[in-house]
Length: 256
Image (cartoon, rainbow, N blue to C red):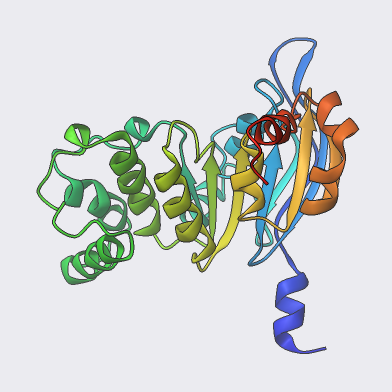
């Protein structure tokens, strides 16, 4: 076996018997065991309230419950939290939760500057990310004056400028028009990182991910190959994720 094969088989993210509760007696996460390999794009599907965002917030220690969360061999705890947050970049569902500086370039530069990088390195990172996300010319614009889709791209840019090993997306396709969804899929597929993507949007998630987990009421209801899971209509219906009515609409419109 080559070194490359060994690298691809090792876990970037591992959750062991993770429980978390917002209120006593009711688990938002109820015994989650999960391994995500280095370099893969892994999708987590589930309806609202299934525990998807709660799980995501455990990856960089924003939330911590019972059990273990291990990131590239490093367990998340008080002593490791600074190192963990350099390894894991989280792209929130609402871009306004990540944008708070006067201009786009200041938002993107904020993270690298706080890592203690010199001014030249920060500038290089900002310019590289602006180019990769088609944001050149946006440097002096105010983030909150941009369109929602543009703010989504800037929010992603603030994470990419940190060059994390793992990038976690919370509902990345929500409230985007089809052209923006396609652009975001292409961007995600081009990332040189481990990607964890939580969503209710099945088709865009399938366009990015080879493996999926399905969450239902804080538990993993299914885990495996994306095509096999999405082909299981009874599973999707039982988890309130049935999207096959779209097929019926297409047949009604005589769209093949």
